[in-house]
Each structure stands twice: as structure tokens, then as C-alpha cells.
Amino acid sequence: MALYILKRILLFIPTLLGITLITFILMQYLPGDPVAAMVGERTSPETIARIRTELGLDKSLAYQYVLYLKRLGTGQFGQSLHTNRKVADDLLQKFPNTVTLALAAMICASVFGISLGVLSASKRGTNCDRFITLFSVAGISIPVFWLGLALMLLFAFYFRWLPPSGMGNGDPLYLILPATTLGTFSLSYIVRVTRSTMLETLSQPYVAAARAKGLSEREVVLKHALKNSLIPVVTLIGLDLGSYLNGAVLTETIFGWDGLGRYALDGILKRDYPVIMGVVLFGAIIFMTMNLLVDISYHFLDPRVRVKGKP
Amino acid sequence: MLNDLSLKDLTSNTPAMIAVIMLMLLLFTAVIGPFLMPYDPCAIDLDSLKQPPGRAHVLGTDSKGRDVLTRVVYGSRISLAVGTIASALSLGIGVFFGLIAGYFGGRVDAFCSQVFDIFLAFPSLLLAIGISAVMPAGLASAMLAITLVGWAGFARLVRGITLSLKEQTYVEASRSVGATPAWILVKHILPNALPLVLVAGSLRVGGFILLEASLSFLGLGVQPPTPTWGSMISLNRAHINSAPWMVIFPGLAISMTVISFNILGDFLRDKLDPRMRV
Image (cartoon, rainbow over all chains, first blue to last red; front, side, top):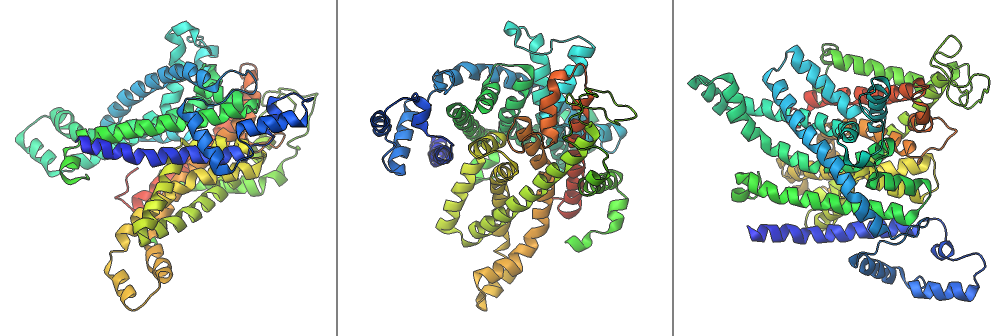
């Protein structure tokens, strides 16, 4: 068991190196001279040359990549071109806000998503099912940023039930709109997967056996079918984290939420490349780590994986 | 497998029919639409700022007096172009590398799979942002970004299909009479993989269109004043309270387009591959 975890972690490393390589390559294409961005206009060529040597910019790309890795290893993600703050500091400060938002969205999406999926599957073919299915297709088709604006228009400006933007010093009312917006895509996806997994499970022989035994429909669905359907759904919830990182960029922008997403947007607008690259890399690392954790937990959740090595 | 699909399958399925009609409407709008519009999409008209939908401007005007309907119609060109071209490119690249990785196995496969995993390790929008931020903004940057984001998913899918198909007897038979790998891949494996790939592709087009819209919303990709649905929403969102139509209609356009692609994709998947759920 520990061996399995170790193996997964070992496989994690080449991919981690790979994403740093891609980020590094992307950074080579950045417009502008990094040294010129740092110094004033009246610096002498000797000073510029000296800074270049200090930063290792005159060495080969391979050497620069190793330098880059070393810097990343010590947690140096560069400095913002505009505020001169360390990107790493900004990332660590804003990350918890994004986590709060994502967690709220994920809990709602999972709870409602699974419930609606089960409901839809158990009432297959009825209008209820059709409505839920249509709703879930719409949910993965509507752009996150537009949904946010529409919800804001409706609930904040028209009905005036909720505040339109900002974080409100932790007041939960401010969390509702952004979390709903962020979670809708995931919720719809979960509804679809839960529904199809449940349908497949409900056609299994043991379900027919349970019904023949005289168990109520509710017992059959909730006690037997659901437990077995949950495994792919649970892994999906973890893997869907990518959609939260993507959606956060758009949602936080609209609702003025001070997290990683808005930090990325500010970086884009101001062409603050260390910030942009920092968020891209950091986001990828978080995503990979979550996938790794989901992978490992899958091992524990599905006994078939333990025995045969694959489901 | 495509031969099993008949027109009757389509007409009996109402949502799919509606989706196909919407998509044909979209195609018409993108190709012919601009010629039918009375207004210039970038023409600033300071006399009609922020007009609500009315007789002169069916969907109203935006904060610079430009007709919203015309801009939405012109915007459809960008969305459709980027969506389809980026899909085709990433599909092509993905199929190519997927076939190679799946067929040759061994170290080639190990290396290719690692590359796929690296690209798939990035959240899609973040990678697209990273790629388009370092290039000069424009249509090309959006297309390149989306293509690079999407190819690895197709590659992994095709690799899986190839792995299972290459064990078939007809492949072994072909090999035993001296067929080259290229021949086997093109003549045997590719045709059998194609329906599944097309289903995956049709399910992804919607995602690519959303990605393009998100990029232009963030200010990357195609730049103003060229109208794109995403940038129309971002440029006008400050006025959402006073003039919501400027934001509602482009968003509606995106949603209807993507829903249609998704419904069509679901329909194709149900008919061509019942095993591949969601």
C-alpha cells in the first residue's frame, strides 16, 4: 500500500518538472528585455551587462533552466513588475481566498449534484428527468462570466437580496453569488455523471434481486445502488478541481473577490509577466497535487483496484 | 459505424433536431449574416449611446453607439472560426500522436504519454492564458492557445483506442503479410477509431468556444474593436445595471451555440458509442 503511494509520487515528479519546463519555455517568448524592465532608462551598458551576468542571462538555456528550478525550489517566483512585491508572497496571501470560494462551490455542487443526479436517474424518462437533464446541459454550456453577471443582475440589482461584489470581511452573504456561479459548471457535470452511473448500476442483476426480495424502491436506490455509483463520482469531484481554478479567474474578476483568479487578471491587464507565469505555474502545481491525492484515495475507495491493479 | 446512423435517428430526437437547426442558423449567421446587417459593427454613433432594444436597433446599442445585433452577428464569425479550426487542429495533432504512442508502445509510448500528462497537468484556461499572454494578441494567439490546450486530451483518447485495436486479428494478419506500420495505422486503425474520435471532438467544440470567449473576456485573443462575444461582455459589464442588453445578448449567443454543440455531441455519442458515457 505504501509502495503504491510511493510509486504514484515518483510518477508525479517528471510531470512536475515538465510543467516547469513548459512555463520556462513560455517565458522565453515574453516580449521585452527582462533587464530593461528592471532598470531605469539611463543605466549604462556596463551596468546592464553586469546585471545580465548576475542573472545568468548570458549562459545557455539549459543553465538558465536549472537556475530557474533552483529558484522555484526555494520558493522564489519572481517579483511583480508593478508592485515589486514578491509573487510568492502574493500567491500565498490570495490562495486561501480562492480556496474558500472553491470549497464552498464544491460542497454545494457535490451535494446538489449527486442529489439531482440520483433523482434524475430514478425517475428516468419523466418530465422531471428531462428538465434536470436540460438544466445540466445548460449548466456546462453557459459561460461562467456571463452566468455570474446574470445572477448579479437578478439577485443583487433587481431583487437586492445579496451584495453584488466584494468579500465583505468574511460575511457569508458575500460568498453566495460567487460560489453559486463557480459551482454551476461542476454541479451540472456531476449531475450528468451521477445520472449515467446510476442508470448503469440500476440495470445490474443485484438491483433486480434486491427489488425481487421486496425492498422498497427507496431502499434499493439509496442503500444499494448509490453506494456503488459513488466511486466514479467521487473521483470526478476531485478531478473537477481544474474547473474551479479556471472558473476562479473569471468569477473572482466579476465579483471582486481577492483571490488567485483576480490576481491573474490584474497581471494580464498590466502585462505583469512574472505574476501571470506565477499563477499559471502555481495553479498547475495545485491541480496536479489534487489529482495525485484523488488518485491515491481512489486506491482506497475501490477495492477492485487493490486486487487487480485496475478497476 | 457511421453507416448505422440514419436521418430518421435524427428526426425522431427533438432536442437533437433543434440543436442541428440552431447550428445551421449559426453557420448562416456567420457566413451570410454580416452582409445583411445595415450597420457597421465598429461605427461609433454618439447620438445613440446605450439605446435599449427598439425599432432602429433591434437589440439596442452599446456604450459607443454601435449596434448590438450587428456586433453579435460579426462576433459569431470569430467564435465559429476559432471553435472549429482549433478543434480540427488539436484533433489532427492529437490523433497523430495518439496513434504513434498507442501503436509503437514501449519507450515511444512512455515518452509520448509523459508529454500528454504534462500538457494535461495544466488547468485549461490557465495554460491558454499563459500561451496567449506571451504572444502578440490576436486571432492567431487564441487559436494557438486553444489548440495547444486541447490536443493532449485527444491524443490520450486515441492512444487508448489504438492500444485496444492493435490486438485485433486483422492487424496481426496485416502485419504478417508485411504491411508497414503507416499502412496499418491509416488503413485499419484510423477508420475504426474515427467514430469515437468524432464523438469526442463534437463534445469538445463547445468547450473550445467557451475557452475562446473566456480568453477574449479577459482581454486576450482577438482584440477590440473587432467584436467578439466575450469582449462585448467584458467591455460593457460596468453598465450592466443601466443597459443590461449589451451584456445579455452576446452571452445568450454563446450559451445557445455551446448548448447546441453539446446536445449534438450527446446525440452522436448515444448513437455511435453507448459505452462512452459523459
